[in-house]
Image (cartoon, rainbow, N blue to C red):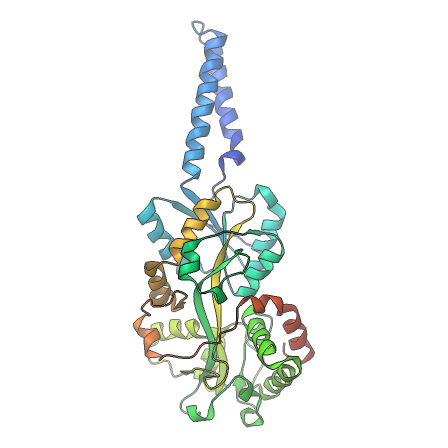
Length: 371
């Protein structure tokens, strides 16, 4: 398990040892001073220990430690901006979601973490189910974040939206041929479809949403059709899948829109187009990135304040411009690139369903031969 520790911080209750050592050093120094009585030394040590402990505690109130599976390069501008505005230092520990959840379980109440910041409602749902998050009440989050993007018990909230939709090669595909995720199972796409692995939570959540709308039997038929239509083996990530379309390896595929946005930023002439799926039916599948307050946090108030700020107009604008993700807060201006893709109808499903149906979705994909 590899961890990228940007900065490390522990709470005052988890840093008692340096205070004790400091006090012992003062005591030893006092023994060498013949003019200082034992009582004076004890008083001085006690006073110094209390002052140091108070200073650490005060400092800890201005630190929020985040366990994050988000790309540091993408999230750090937001956190730096928060520090500039508030003076609150944010310390970031990054890894994949699985190892972070395992670490939180191992640390229990001794964890230095205050907030979990991750992607996909399925991951946040799992963290809550494992008892790693604590419920919070916030009028600000309730105002800024629609209920369908929040946990009903208050354990986590969405902070940005990521649409998972259809992409195509415009030199080979007429967009009028495209319609729904289910249509990609039609034999007309035989040998023309590219997909990311089913092992990634993004596809698990997409299939979970299809199960909710279409039922298990119909969803399994669609997945089998996808597998039959594959042009090549599944890809490990969305970027590689999109590049395969550009290279002519396949003609259509499914990916998160922000991966496409980042490719366009680097290659404005990237020869792939976006198509908003299911516009005449349920709407395009939309998932979240989000956060929750750690159950063992020593600074839950600080974590909540940061979450509230991340739902503000300013932070939501940064999500759109820097990360190419859609604001979770309604009415916030999107970036020029996102606006260029045009408006689209979003699936109105509550994202908590992605977690509730995740296990069944994984089992179904495995049964259908989707690797």
